[in-house]
Structure formats: C-alpha cells, structure tokens
Length: 122
Image (cartoon, rainbow, N blue to C red; front, side):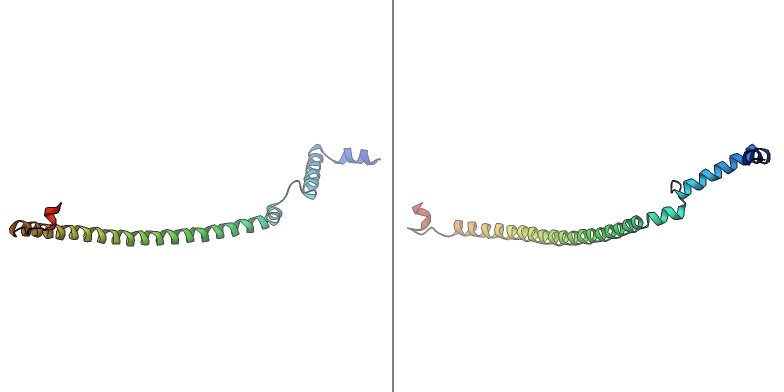
C-alpha cells in the first residue's frame, strides 16, 4: 500500500478539507497575514502611546486657552468699568460746566461793560 492509497482510503473529504483549511490558516498566521488582537496591539503600542501624548498635549493647550480667555474676559470687564466711570465723570463735568456757563453769562449780562475791555476790540 502506498501513501496515496492509505490517504484516500482512510481520510474522508470532510477531514481532508478541514486539514487543508487548518493548514492554510496556520500558514497565514505564521506569515503574519492574519494576526491576533494581541499581535496587533503589540504592533501599534507605540502609535497608541503617541496618540495618548497628543491628547494630553491638546488638553494642556486647551486649558491654557481657557485660562487666557478668562483673563481677557476679566481685563475686558475692568476696561468696561473704567470706561463707564470715565463716561460718568464726563457727563458730570458737562453738567457742572453748563452751570458755570450759565453763571458767567448771567454775570456778563448783570455787570456793566468796562470801556476798553477785550470784548470791544473784537
């Protein structure tokens, strides 16, 4: 009996296909054409670490941006308060100057005009 005769008499088609499939799968695993999840994670471990570092750096930059934004908001509030105070002061000064103008105009009408004053030379 030859090896071929022994194989054809003892092996069924089902077991031959199973052996062929398992052999093909073993070859694919051995040549890294099919990899396991563990192999994949080991291969991309440095990439995962890189992405984690990038996420941490982005979170730090975002925290800096938020802190800067809050500082600018506070500065804008102080600036607005100073501008409101300056506007209120200008409005108050305007009212005082209107009263002073009224007093000066009243004095100008009430007092006699001296001869040779500045208002006659104009």
